[in-house]
Image 1 (cartoon, one colour):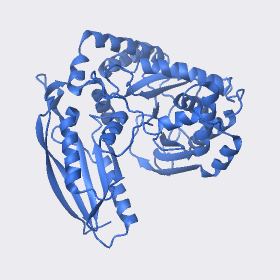
Image 2: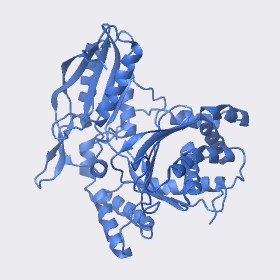
Image 3: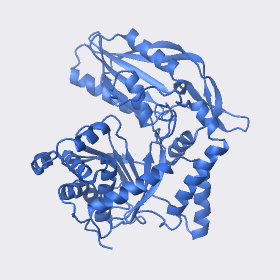
Length: 465
């Protein structure tokens, strides 16, 4: 966009405690497995406005302090005595802060677009996990003042909650419900060591048994075989966005009536929408679980999220009953979502042999809300939603297909994004297994199911057995 953009680097020194080596954590092994299966970087990246008056020196000081305070950010991969990857945390070093000057005559809207595009480019840019620091930061200067900051993090050291914690440290988000510092907060190296001890091996054993119960009799794939190899416009794997402020209010109304949280209501609504659009009910899905309820995990800078597994039956019942089932299933999924991915892979291979065919769960759901989740829950407990409020929001719903991917290990990947006052879904579908009409019916069905059940405890799922 700006071919004459000037770029410089400020080398920022850092030093802090916690240096050493350790085995990879289960969360890191899970992320590396996702990287191999998808071919994606799984970076976390985005652009943020810079408050007026902030200088390059102040941003550099923030970056150095962040690197010094959190040993996880000083982690790179190494090789252990067996030739396997391991964690190596350095005591000190230097990290680069990129400073980009855009032309004075550039329109501020174009500068903001440039910042967004830089964040997106860095989202896709791979890390050298053995050489690069996990934090990449750039500032954009326009007419002599800083206007945007682009922060990129390697998913090998953070998950969604850890990212929000770091952003709060930088003043980029306000975590109003953040807990007081916990002296038990685990560091990445300690976690890698603990996960090799007998007590945590037993935790993994129990989790894998839970997975086995769900995997033992599943079909080869969740949504059947490929029936349309050409997909949509000659491409199979499409990603898109669906946003519904009306569904947001309806989910709050259901949560208030059923006395549960919006995440479990949304899980139930998605299960019903899937069943209506595809006939897949009961639905067995992977649910990404944060694991932050475990002692010492709430404030940890570490990738603690792992896949849980659950089954929700939405056949011949009411939406409210599916909420009850989803709540029960998600609690169990959360209890058994902390495990050694290598052990789970071995159990999955054994089950494939026992049932006589390979099978996998190819629907994944991820509620990534961190910053906006509390507001949604507070809204569900506050004033009652009215039908008129939902009707007024209905015109704001949108669905767009943004582009294609080369590969996806799942047939459907549904992510609830951290956007205020809407149900905002980032989705990827294998349109070799779904028709385009099915995919769109599923997404629009999220709003339809929620609105139908918002004020009717007897609203049926309309999924026949």
